[in-house]
Length: 349
Image (cartoon, rainbow, N blue to C red; front, side, top):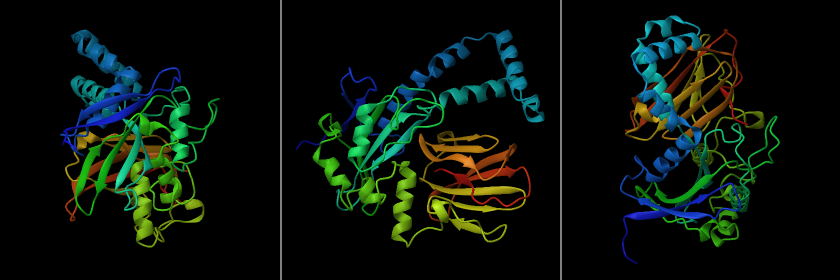
């Protein structure tokens, strides 16, 4: 078989009247500059309208920029932090938010010895269900065929449980022991939920929902599924009833729940994530809410859910630094609204 510098992946539109399409891209970017992630982010940025917003921002004149900066300060409640920033700094922050459109990465299979270290991932729009994107029947069937329950329907929307919006699906060869990460082909034929690889994924050790996650639950984020497998191999992580991370025995104590380490004091909660060597701040996106936090790195969601207590947003931040093992560590600090102990950091159920 001839060696190629390209790989193929597929686009599965939510509209069933449209065909599943093959796309090709270069392998040259490797893991650090993966062409599939870049392709998906550009697509979902265009779909979100952020590309048009960036274009409009570039066309603003001096008076419009002054007016925009004033509006941004007002939206921030004219806080001391916002008032201390220059107009250019505020507008650059807005630009960064438009440029940092992420995509949700869902692990369909994780690499195992039995599946020849092949991982298959699905790339969808960030908060597609919240944005009321249409139900994607074919993507949902593919997820179920590999042993996962479909993502739950939620709240006030009338959409069925499952994947929403357009998605991309790709495959990689990922063998940490052999230090291999390379994109390999995922074809239109592979997108058929009756494919042989789907049947193999459902078997023990096959890397799918039943083979890897132990029971056909909804497909988790890629980082979460890999962390759970690692924790299982090491004898299990520290979790309580319902899969909730256990409370540190005393303020300042640290717990490793398999996905991240966390600790708390009277003033703050600290979460520590291991991230890939070479990860830069521009790849990191953290959204703080009064009772919610979402963390993404290079488009991959590390955690997204309701926090164990109220957050002081202005006292919450993150840092990125080298760790002793040669990788990098992302540290998220959540300012606590009161001194009570949180039973868990983030509820992702």
